[in-house]
Length: 464
Image (cartoon, rainbow, N blue to C red; front, side, top):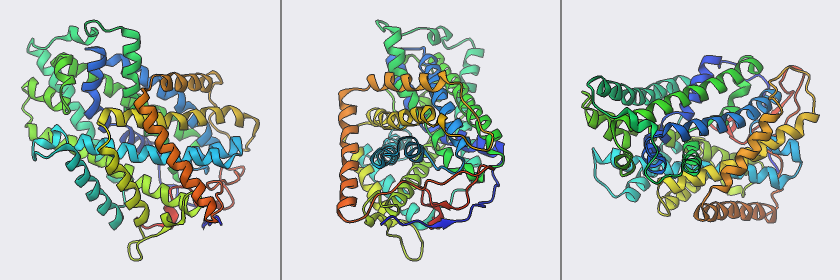
């Protein structure tokens, strides 16, 4: 039977608009661009900014849907609940939630491989898969001990990530100031490259660098004036990340040719080294490792809490609800998500894992964009953001276009993960745990709810 923990409706609203902006920026910024700029350059040539701009536009379309849904249902808790409200089919809402869970695990696997690549080799030379496995185990141990990430800590980590990206931009500027570098490369595509399909394929990878904004739905009930501040922070953070990514991609192309960037798993380190700027390679590598490690740690905390929460609600087998008695952390969920992530690191590189993550999230985003249109028939008493109707329609089309660009290998990998989720759902039903909707609550006139049930993050029942 579905278990629900009642929590008060008065979570302290300590998150201001600027703090939420930095929270989203910290989630979006950093790890993806540190690892994938070179691969994007390999697909399009020097014009790395083009797929990044396209990916930003596509991300903003779906962000508009999230802005409406989150401010309309400020206690809803995420895409799975939006699906349940809109479609009323438990299996659909479950699969949306499971895609979020699987995406988190895949993302951690990709980041673990990025961590154990050329950035780590500056300090320690180990096989990438072995380094990734050890890294994930260390993350799991920290997770099980009880990691508490405050927004203020996130500000510090975001500052570290941003510093590394600014170093790249400054390095390119100094190089140009000395009359070196080649600014013309930033406006040229690779030899024999067809720009349209190349930009679309590059945008598929660049899209990976923009995802993360959707997790901000989980903190909206702690946000001051959500109807006003959430859209501003969301769009502002995505725009800021987009500007930084375009600057970094352009800087990389100015300093090094696309072939050099594509051949490296630490392209930004190569850019800094080639520029001659007085920043030691080990220091920049350390900054990159901090950015990637922070992303992986936050992702695995989210994934394990989501698995725990789905177990509590009967959406996954009951074993996922087991916690350490003293620490209060979900050890079974941590062990399971870590084991899957370790296995995934042996099945493909950073690029194919990043594309698999995008595939899974595109299903989530497709559901949320359709849910916006379906839920227009519902009225709430409080004011909220309303997206211009063509935007969610265009967002649906953008998701379909990006899905059409995925390779057969990525579809095969994503299909196996979703199939595993369906099996777990069936096991939960067969073992007598009746799957229920993830924490739907009724919205009152002030945007709150009389009694919110624990959402899929499981945060109210854990100390970690």
